[in-house]
Image (cartoon, rainbow, N blue to C red; front, side, top):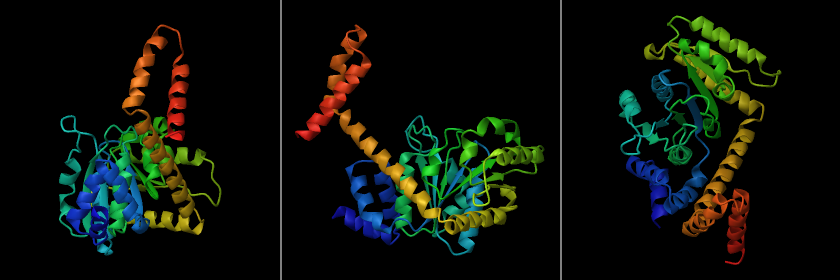
Length: 320
């Protein structure tokens, strides 16, 4: 009954209940699983935008300016700002909230800071669940702004319909090093703070890399937009590029295919995590600890022990 009542409040976009629902999915447990099942029928309408890039590139300022443009169109915006985990509390640092104070009081905007909680990809696994809550609450756009840790920032692809990589002129020298990871996920690039020296060289480096990628008439070619987000310069172009990418995805029948692939990978991750949690319960840890000595003494290989633990786990499930 609790989940049904809370989900109804989420559907009505009662802000305190939306915040409560996000807290539940962030502290993942059986409550979160039940709640996410309840709200799923209303999930899928929001358009999700990922904004990532190196620290200090101006991602929060871009998020702020984009949100204001969406609000001018009468659209509701949910923002999930994934912060580095606080070493003191394990929670999210609230720097982004402070920077977004200008839009934080708008009733049509919901901002939530979340901790990465050890996620190497920068985007907390729970951020995707939180996006589902905001989706169910009726927000038209959900912006996922990530901590920007470089090449490992690839899990944003599993959350966003359009992924924006934000760079600055100083990124020019490191573009080659980034191309194998962060560079590959961009649907388009923003070169922010483009009034600084080196902007043209950075754009030239990006264009060189993009031209080396395999593409044909039917494939999407990422664009590069020079902005000065702090002065709101060229932010309308960013909005148009998002719409252009969205239209391309729909015209080429790629939008649903992309979401299907994301869903498939998400289900795999959920299954793997649930099995891992159950496998390393108290009994799993005990059987591992009891076998360690045999490995250290050279009597058995770690592979023998691993296979034995898996066999015991499977047989326990079959005969339960």
